[in-house]
Structure formats: structure tokens, C-alpha cells
Image (tube, rainbow, N blue to C red; front, side, top):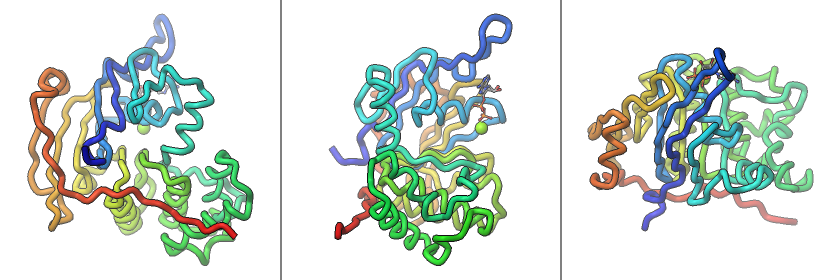
Amino acid sequence: MTRGSKDIIKLKSLTKRYGVGDAEYFALKDLNLTIKSGEFVVIMGPSGCGKTTLLNMIGLLDRPTSGEYHFDGASVEKISRRRQARLRSSKIGFIFQSFNLIPGMPVIDNVALPLVYCGFGKTRRHKIASKILGRFHLNEREFYMPHQLSGGQQQRVAIARSLVNSPSVILADEPTGNLDSRSSHIVMEELKEIHSQGNTIIMVTHNANLTTYATRVINMLDGTIFTDLKTVVDKESPVPKAETVVKKSRRRTKERGKKSEKKTGTKVKKAKIEVKED
Ligand code: ADP
Ligand code: MG
């Protein structure tokens, strides 16, 4: 089995209810979704349809009301909150619309922050953070404060932070929502590069133009998946070539297993940041 064909995320009948009684509201309703390692999934849908709630569930930031969640083959409900937190900090990277950098903390410390939870000492943390900032051509900004950077630079720092613990899954919630088109393009090119190194990316966006980066486009409506469209990526061409499957979620669930996956042909290799110890 190639790495690209492994189920990294499997959600079965996932439901999230907020409130009780008259205030009861289902942000996610009986949602089924399987994401394979190496996919670049773009999630779209009207405001309030449950996109952020879904990312929060996948990212283990919140728990579903009912349903099953398997991450990399393991049932998430069955492990302790402590192990969930460890899983989150070692396997999942987050990028948010508002960057979520800590103000008053230099860029290098912001990027190094996820490593605190890995128990690394400060020197080691800085070394890893500096290396990854170099990849984003941000070494000269290491000791700047976030407010001294442009929006695009802040988002690239946030992407560097999301990658610092070498996660395999990157969750991005409208990462270009606060950026101008030039900065959006730079950020998307970074995500494309990260994807080409074998990472799984799940990105929420309102910008239909960005679906050209995706290998799969999911449209949500009222807390469930409305359409699920897979694209075939041609190795020679950066833009997905042919759109293959458009199915309403229910029919898709029924037919699962009958349909053989189309291979994307992209090379899958996990990004690693190597750091030599002194
Ligand atoms: P989207 O990201 O697609 O705009 P969200 O996932 O943020 O939508 O929200 C889905 C629905 O759930 C919305 O109607 C929202 O008001 C509701 N919701 C989200 N978070 C909470 C919460 N903590 N408490 C109550 N309702 C919530
Ligand atoms: Mg949202």
C-alpha cells in the first residue's frame, strides 16, 4: 500500500449539537467523510454551514456529540484527553484566518511555541524554528514582533509555526481570508509546496479560485456534505485536469467501496526538518 492510499481521517455519522431545548442547534449532522493521506481537500459552503466546527473536530480542538472519529487508524474517542492532546501536538498543524500569532512575542518564539509541548529546551526550539523560518525566507525577521510584519508575512510565520513539529495533517481555516491577492497567492504556493512534500491539507475557503490547488473539493450545507468532487492531478500540470466524481453525500456513502480510487500520480514523501544536535 502506498502512503497516498492510507485513510488518515475517517468520520462516521459525526454529529455536533450546540445548546439544549429551544436553543438546540446541530452544527454537524450525521457527517461521513474519509480523507486519504496526501489529499489536498478544499472545503467550501455558506457561512454557518459547519466548516469551522468540522475542522475543530478533525483537529481535536472539540469533541463531537456523537459519531466515530478514527485518526490514522486509531479511534479518537477511546483515547484519553491527554493522549489526544499529544496526538494533536505531534500530528496536526493549524493555520487560522487571523494568523493567531501571540503579540509581544518575537517571531522565532511564536514559531517555536508548539515545540514547548514536545518538551524541547529553548536552544533546540530556536534552532528548529530558525531552520524552518529560513525555508520561508524570514530569517531576517526572526526577532521582529508580529505587528512589525505585513499580513502576508504574518501568515507565512503562522504557516512556519504550523509545520514546526513536522505534522502530517495541516488544517487551514480561511488562511487567505485576510490577505490581498498577491499575499494570498504566495501563501497558496507555500501550501502547494507543503502538499507536494506529502502532507495532507484540509483547507476551508470562500474563494472558488483556490479550488485549483485542491485534489478534492467538498461543499457543505447545513452541517453535512452536499457535494464531494475529486480532481485528477496531472503530474505535468499544476492545475487539476479533469473533474471526475460529483455525488451527493448519501449516494456516495452507499457506493463507497464499489468505486476504485483514481491515483493522483503525485509523489508522496513526508516533509522532515532535520536538526543536528550539538
Ligand atoms: P462556518 O465555519 O461554516 O461559518 P461554524 O462551524 O463556525 O460555521 O458554525 C456552524 C453553526 O454552529 C453556526 O450556526 C454557529 O452559529 C454554530 N456554532 C458554532 N460554534 C458554536 C458554539 N460554540 N455555540 C453555539 N453555536 C455554535
Ligand atoms: Mg468558519
